[in-house]
Image 1 (cartoon, rainbow, N blue to C red):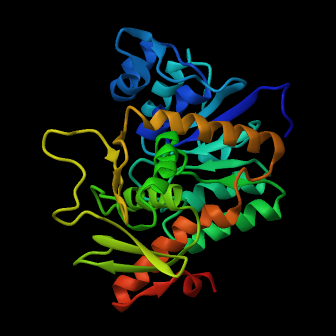
Image 2 (cartoon, rainbow, N blue to C red):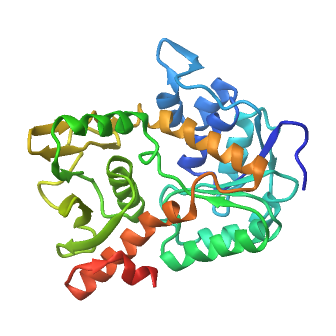
Length: 333
């Protein structure tokens, strides 16, 4: 497999909402056909004053080449139609990694449970993969994908929109005004693994890497999750949850959104509400990283950084089961 000029050919596996969400960042679709195929994504990506103009720029030098959906071929056909019917609608997910430079595995509702199965054929061919969040359902599966990529001299990446949000990065810079920071609160709206992955990625964006331990409380795993950071011998606790009092969405707020509250010695700071209207700005950054990976076959971020959210999640599962604090070193070994 070799690049054709400077154009990165993208194959998309699973044509759910996330496939339609990322597609305009890979290549600008026909706006009318795209709106017909998925009104919700069109609503967030296109300007209300000009429904043919994207709110954020498409990453240049990429084209959607192949699409596949295991459950509903019509969804794949609809995504292809948004690009004038040019992308090939494949008959199997193994075909998607033929004659492409990058595979994107979309995942809106499946919590990463099939990511290893879907990625294995393409990684074995040496094709770089951008895997939607969460990286996988288990830490073991995420590690296996990385091992496959290394074995076949290619790369794999997973990145949350919240980990690379420019709005949260700017908020991180404001923490010096209230330093030293003692705690963060990151409300969530679900205990779905996809939502939890976003939540711990918010913490990773604001606090950086270096989470040391987790505690997990509530009747169900991930109801309330505490993350411990050691900074200057102080413990910074980060909580996220879907228990009463920790719900980000209300009856009259229907968009996905995350917001951070930080408490420090000099007061409190509040991040902007990073929601569906602001998510695409992080998406552009991630697609640029995926493009660079397709060109170099090298991971755009370290695998250690990529695995940390999965290590937090695995440690939280164990903490809920064992009813005690679990250190990330316990799941790393």
